[in-house]
Image (cartoon, rainbow, N blue to C red; front, side, top):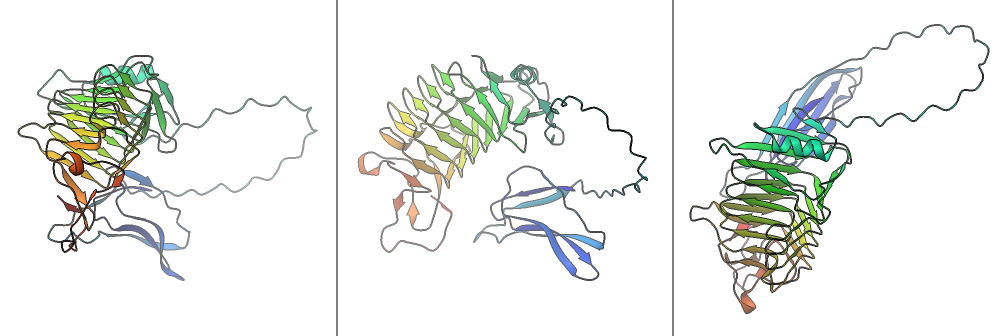
Length: 375
């Protein structure tokens, strides 16, 4: 068994091979492409005739004019062997006993616990661990957990401004968890000194009278979302699904924001005075705003902002004055033949309708021959 890490846009293939004196080298396991910014575990069964093993790793080609952007690593490689004891001769068969009542069902096995993670089985335990965290904390929710917040959000904050605490919350690898806010609160508020990492969790039925119906990052807080679904959440003001305000950082990858509503703007997401905003491989679908953009409203950024980037993201069925509105500059990663202005305009120049990647078609004679370009 071993842990592997394969992260980057130009990732190639990692394989595990074994050598047999009769058949030679053969591949027993392989993975290709970006597997995300996480350590993953794999196990391979070797035949008794295998005499050698090896790992074969190859990254993909670099983008034109740029260095390769990939990171491949291995850790905790171990081998184990099990030799069964020889069977004992069977004893003489005793007389058959009378039938016994059926045994109660066995409890379900515990989920596989990732390294350095603590298993969380209730919302009360989760709340206590998040609120009292004084150092980096990694939490894994029980397999297939359904947690109801009971009307009170989970708050990730750190009063010690000189130290940033990272709190990671993820589902069990074999069954995702759901957190239900019951329409009585948002799910998470992240503020200064705290970096919240959410992995493979579904957040439903969030509600906040002000900003951020499901997740609010503000005052220097940072929220990193990977494989998250946010649905059926609402805000009385901005950001029906997510809001990022006052120097906060927001990083989304493989996130789905669906069916969220804002009383003002940004039915899916709203960002104001943002320090950084990144959205990649995500989808905004059937979100609605009473004013402004139905999917994303990027209204302003800090003067020293790291900027905003949107790449390979789909917008479908969103309802608002526009689909995406950007008063502050956004870099868009576009497919060949498409482009996006850094800020949105009015009328025919507005970002409206359904699209994936980039909306605008290049004019005749300006088609180009490169893909994944940033506007």
